[in-house]
Amino acid sequence: MDNSEFDRHTRTVSGLVIDLFEINAVYRQNDDLVFSLAYRAAPMRSRDALAERLKTGGYRYEMNRSEDGLLLRINPNPSLKIPPLNIIMFLITLVTVYFVPVLFRNLAYAHPIDETLKDLSHGAGVQFTVALLSILLVHEMGHFVASRRRHIVTSWPYFIPAPNIIGSFGAVIKSKSPFLNRRDLIEVGAAGPIAGWIVAIGWLVYGLIHSGYTAPSGLTPKDMAISLDGESILMQLSTWLMHGPEPAGQILRVTEAAWAGWVGVLVTAINMLPIGQLDGGHVLYGLFRRRQHYLGLIGMAALLALGYFSPMWWFFAAFGLIFGIKHPPTLQDDRPLSRASRVMGYTAIVILILSFTPMPFPSPFH
Image (tube, rainbow, N blue to C red; front, top):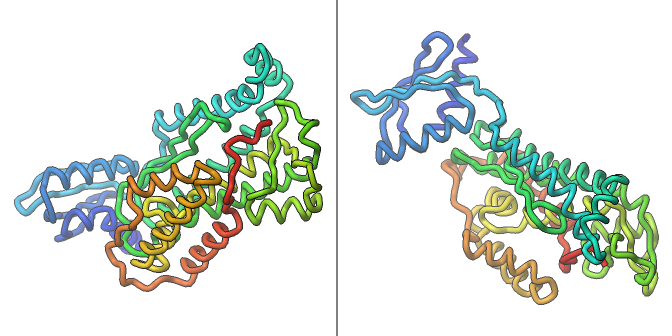
């Protein structure tokens, strides 16, 4: 380990401990770093928090008590091994996304399981599964890669299976270390929505090419259809460019790819809501600091009003009330933003404006 590597690894590991401990000294021991740390708060709580943080980050380490506090010996090169639980949850979600939406489309039949198995044998659900999971995976890995780049410890993505019309409640990652400054907050918060949105647009455009308008009377329970009333700017513009304005009395019948893209665009908009714990809360606090709280209150009022047209928004308003609208400060709030972080932040806001669906359908099946 040369001096430049030593300095780089020291900065990285320091960012993982600085909120819990004061750093008295750092030195090399073979390929490891040894930190002499002094407690900032309750010793047991600080040690447990640091241990969980380092374990989640994939670091190999030893902690020993010293006269002044704690000695941390750590290999500064983390392992990127995916934990078994994350793999299992992904595989279960893969099954539910593949099977459950096709089952929902067949519930109108006398033998929905038989119809579902027959449809699956003919390829139903494959395109939707590939499309939706690629959107969710790229979104979460956008957060993961940006976090690692900024030396913030996060878990691998947890995919969440669900018995709903898309077979999933999405995916989440857990942050185990604090954001040092607003630049990191914006870049990590915006990376997921931007990356996932690009993939969602690709699937949406591909699917819309093979979609088209039809009369509602011509739909079967197995068809997926979307009315453009109350749709996002992006959905209305994309459909108009490819198929022209929606004819009176007709509806847009969509393919599995278009439906997955539609879901991906909606999920991106939901993640960008200005609620403290969502991506939008991170981005808005990073850009506007304490004004994020007022923007969050305005957003909450809008969700409550829109809930009369689409009750789904009341759920997210309740989420904001339970988990908090206000975003906490970073450790170095006064550090100036970089140009790149501002561009990412405002790009994410533009994505929210284009993707927000005022009246999303509770179900696309008719």
